[in-house]
Length: 344
Figure: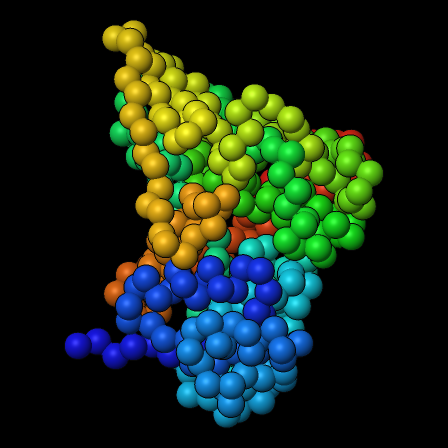
């Protein structure tokens, strides 16, 4: 029987319980310690998962000195990811960081360097690409069921008040591009490869938030596929099924479309074939986030295979930094009103 890998969680806010539940779907991992700046919050999560309060800390370094762990899952706010990653790496422990890697590109790059220097792996919990309908779209593109793509649109349009369960987002100067942008731009890379140009427009519509809540990112891949990525937290549309992502891929022999309620249609000269690729629903999942919570399990499984040296992770720091560069380029493009070109 395989040895269970013991891990600690840094940060016990909104997402932490779902992350731990998702780990426990894999059976061969165990959360043994928790850190949170406000200890009382961590104690509530400890009680939920049967973790003795003596393994709850308000100081991350004390946890690392006192606990026997195999890796750390960082689920704190983005501005703390870099410093906590450096701390964990200094103790020679593998690091998993929630997306976005950090709140700026320089500290994200530093996270990669410090993990390399300490010879520990860095993984980013980029789960959006692990949603079952998006994985199916990827396979259909790979199989060229509608031919080769030449243009695509990825849409995430909702009026869901995402900042109500994550209040820090309401005050963030960088909002939608920093929050949902990493997920969607990573999906763009996952489906269509790396980008060679990018142009972006952003807008603040909702007076309740400080940052931009609408963004359109127009890109061209190295293979000349045009990709338009639209995101909004203020759109009232007919099929607002938060947090679903809609995708239209135009190909030289037809099209592939991920539509509301996880229906996927492939249209060619022979007609249209439709299938439904719904996510697995777990008893612990919030119904509003079911498709997202299911993808956490699959993302964790992929990372765990790398931790156990049984496979490779798709979402390493080295890979995800490419997504973060797209996010940074989107802000730069919007601020300067110009097309950003990337080196090949």
